[in-house]
Length: 125
Image 1 (tube, rainbow, N blue to C red):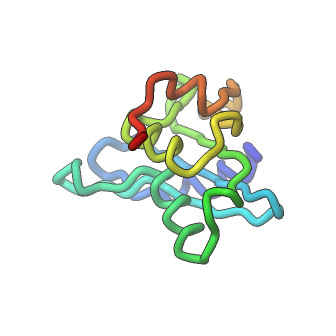
Image 2 (image 1 turned 90 degrees about the vertical axis):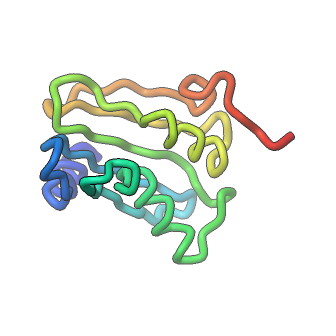
């Protein structure tokens, strides 16, 4: 998966921070959806790679019960984990036991469960 992420990260639009992020959302049927970060001078209106991948899957008719795992690569030397806004999004669309594998630019990785990344997430219940 790391090699795929390295190819995808080149599509990142990050002229402001120069910090590129790529994401692959893998569904239970093997289908994969990709995303990259897309920046805007108003950082709040930019998109995270995770948001793009999830939005792409939802747009194609996939549902949360179809989602299996998520893979994230950042262009820095530290392992890139989803931001806190994306973590709330992950809680919405993934099972608490779904895997999130995070990489740095050199391929070093760390695996998390959604429940690890989001121990006290906001829920409508």
